[in-house]
Length: 219
Length: 217
Image (cartoon, rainbow over all chains, first blue to last red; front, side, top):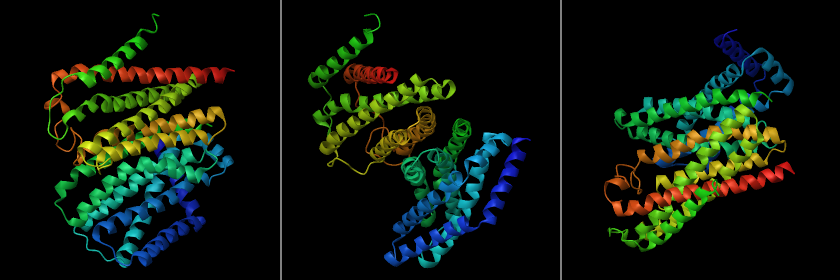
């Protein structure tokens, strides 16, 4: 089977598996909604700059929770089975693509609900949405490899946070800046720099993941 | 003796940079004044840290392709020594900032980036501590090391250049080369950089050899 066919088959399997036991998906959606509600009850109203930062912090924690399970949930036996039928690149690529979809769903829902409880004018909604899409892609690409590293250790959930926070901070700084530009409704040309660097970092991270995952996989 | 010439060179260069750095003539610049001498101590720390991390990544890649435990030991000792130099860089920078910028931790992107990069390598040490099996530990931490290195480069060299920074060479400020690093200062600065890099490699080398003896016995 070619890489493309493998990725397609594995992606289909991931989605079917997720759909059959919806508890993980529902759990993470409920997590983000209740976090937003907790923030709403404790803050009531926020200023524009806090609004933006708070949204990304909520997204950060929800994304870590959503991605952590992607390698932990699978039993050793099943991983061994995949090892015999698919290439390592296909597996990591599938996980990244699947996590991008999952986080996009999460982010759009979070943004919608967040916008309802915290009303805040956004100058350039299309650019803000682009920032959210780029954010989902960045979180998914960085956290997927780290979750596979963390799943190999004894204390995976604590290590997931320790390992991923320093790595995600540069991306988070760029995302917050980009979405702040969108909120202020600045000219789009002033954000090209951030978008370019974000895409470049993502490209590097995904390439490095593809190169390194085969070593993690062969256990 | 033939193998150790670089250790003698390192000691001579450091000794020279300390004496010359404190005694030689320096340009008198507003705000900086005599504190410009800290350039000979603060900047070489970061250069040494980056060289040590670079060697560590090279040996992590070597470990992944060879599976030789010695390569893993070199990688971890390079990181251990690099973290010490990172802390020294932060401390010397904080002393300098306290006198020239008014507070030990001004909200400067380069400081924040350096602190985050140090956190990243401390996470590497924690990751190693969380696994008992030697080969698994070596492999997984090598993967993380290779993964973290490009992100560290982005943190230290790309992000500070995109925003305003107090450091020279960032956010539109010109680098040292263009105005205040005159030829007199270069005579001390470059030997100091080379000397500290050699010292860093020497310390890491000693630690690696101690580890190797423990590992073999």
